[in-house]
Image (cartoon, rainbow, N blue to C red; front, side, top):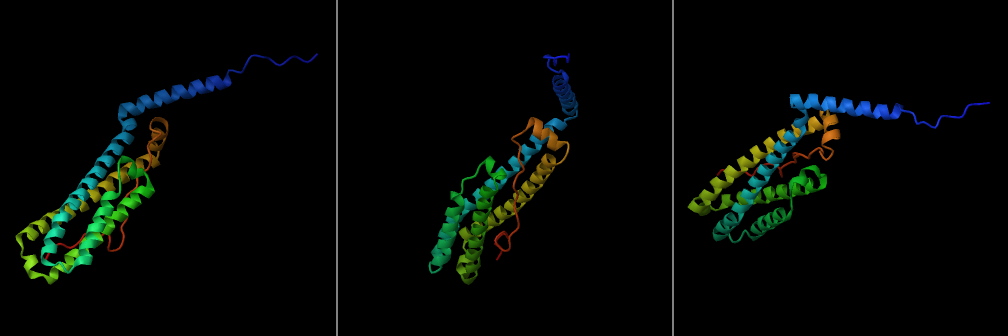
Length: 210
């Protein structure tokens, strides 16, 4: 008479899960001891900090533009279209809402970059018109704004460079082993970040030297 199948569940799956959990704990302990388990969040925070500096410098530029526009308007009211173009580009750039999540959202990041590039282009066109107004170029208020703008454009370039470097380090970590495994197990919300891309003319800082 054939024997009845045993009703006792196999212990193999349970033992396999236990072994996997113990192995994970052991690996985590080893990684924690050497600091590898903290590398993903550390690089993430560095990239976010660099992103904040990019935003700060772009905001600094935006804050300078109203005074620049008013100063130019006092000497070159006939450049109405150029002045309006700068004002509208600034308003559009300022209307793009960004936060820490923007760096991992391709659409939002592109929207932000495009708006800033458009403002750079409009600002560059405004500064080109200044060549036609010698009195404006010698105005002390304009010279002070010119110096501040030049410094800000340099800071933007440095901030973008630092951000690109920080994102490269972070993205490499979460896309390669063992960082990829660590992120999957311990930091499931960690996502690759977006970075700036070069675009002809628009991404080039305006020339503010006369």
